[in-house]
Image (cartoon, rainbow over all chains, first blue to last red; front, side):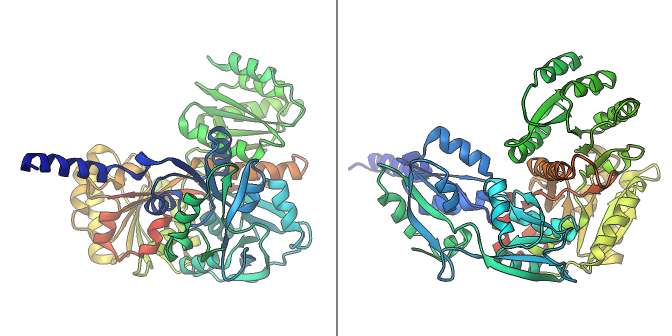
Length: 234
Length: 314
């Protein structure tokens, strides 16, 4: 092979290497999961691990729902309660954390701890499901007649509490740990119960092959799993 | 004049659900807030969106009355001012519906004299900003210099009070009161760097000292050797092309819509009676942009927090 031809081949290989993974993508994976990590960071992490899969991470549940209905991706990565609300998708992998398939929810307030069942209790939470269903699920654990304030991002819960717009917020242990690193205000846990929403789940559209998605998820390292709020797949 | 068109749109409203009327200027940020409102209210309340080319008064009242809104969302200072007339006239016969004012400069001041309006401020509070900065930095954040005009003195004093609970002291310097804002800026930055030893600098949005001339003659030369992180409220000032901002924290407009929806759901739960007219909440949702190069130069970053930024500029 002549040297000029070799150079041409080398250039072509460089060109191929420079193309984004999505240029070869045969499969589409849509992702919605509410965590402190922003969608752009989750997108970057999944792009690195999901070769041959075009990944789209959504920051809002509404957008996720709309695009899943419109484009019917081959697979979705979201909480099981959202999967249940979508027709045609079967769970294939479930996330696990500390040996369980759901986290604990904590009701956190400021010191002195407000009574969770007080008439004036207002509880902040990240809205990730139908509002009425979500609030009904929480009322099963939080006594009295609390009102609820929803936010779209986990991080918004801290100012909501610190500015006293609510008397308590519902968070996981990991989120509380992060909030305690940010704020010197004493954050007090008044209640703990099993979360009403499950951990992230991979679901594949019926009739589509699941192997590419399962193997891609299995390649996620500890850091990647942590960004998805889990420590292993079950 | 767009009001007749709005009136026609609203007159066509014949839904069985209660209605929330949104009076707003045109523009993508306002539309984003409406999306946030709809995402929370859409299943149980009709959100009638009325984008306007200009704020009216009498016609506005007419349009609003036709749909008998249970609540009104007012966006932008001009429309809140127009609502003042509407509320006064409306009160002659029957009480005007409660309103939520948002996406306006100093909402707290605009609500003065209004009877049945509460609000969400547009200015991101210092507490939110400094806790985010603290989460990014290995170094402690204890003293923060803040540059502002005299008009924002009460806002800065309010921020200082909230920051006390976080053991953060604000060191304010007022600029722009004399004739030479650029000189004031250079002097303030020198003082922060050499006398006050601040851990960070917070620059409030204000055209009086963030215009092209003052940026060129005041900020850029003064910040060339400034060692602490600089927090700003606009994306243009964190671009790595200029040595200015390190970290920008902006209101998240969709999140503002969701927050307004929360206030409306509270109103609904209270039989559409406003419990605390005149009260103003800070915005809870923000958009965070980090100039990574500047951040690396000015402090030791907690790498794990990078994934929590909405945008990284390198």
